[in-house]
Image (cartoon, rainbow, N blue to C red; front, side):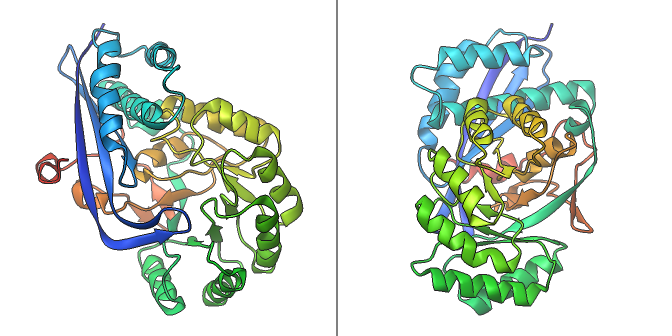
Length: 362
């Protein structure tokens, strides 16, 4: 039995190549990377991580270093379900979301990476293995870009091999959003997969109006039209707006997804492995969606998530945007014919440039 010997944590502030904007977070100039390096009693290591959009990183690191390390040290590293449940309930009263579940996500990813490395298997094969080729879209954070710059960004993404594009909506005037979506549709042509993301900008009534205005432009989905807590609002937008709805990047547990799916509030459940509790609940969410005949998509962390979507039969699109993290990874995501390719390297296969990251330590 290999026991957890130690957990080494890191907090790094990653500058963005360009300032990014959306309808709720405003200008984003950097993000925080939180890492968990779990070593077992045999000397093997697994690596996990989570991210923030610039705040609360120290709180996440504290949970990892002070709470989870105390609970997990000495435990059997192979008993991931038991350890996840133990940590969830030990931190439940002050947790159930926020920094606690982000920290648990990083730790859980590290455990699965460790397990797959010990098995000498890529994570997607260890998790069952469905299809190594995962359809992938480029996630633009581009709400304030002029239309000509938006189209240039799109052309750059097409040149990189993407065959599906997401753009931001949620400007002050709906007419401006509609004009931008129309410009993108003309630029991409009929039938090209186009997604729009509102980042929780609207009330349900506003979202229904927007969805109906976007309906002629054949969106794959409209993402996060209302705040994540508004389950009935999601259901109304999906039923009355005439456009499929994706949501879930701000949900923090399997039970959150249960409520949204059961209410009919989502067409494409969208968990983020770095904030829903890790690999363990991500797969449960994917299988829950499958039971409702729903395709699952993803948010963020594409280098890990490509493995998870490659392991389930109801996967749809992988979201790809690295926020500059690809500069600190040895072998970034590979695209081929519009698909991300789950790597064959053991574990999740992410090799961080620890020396390069050290200069960014917060």
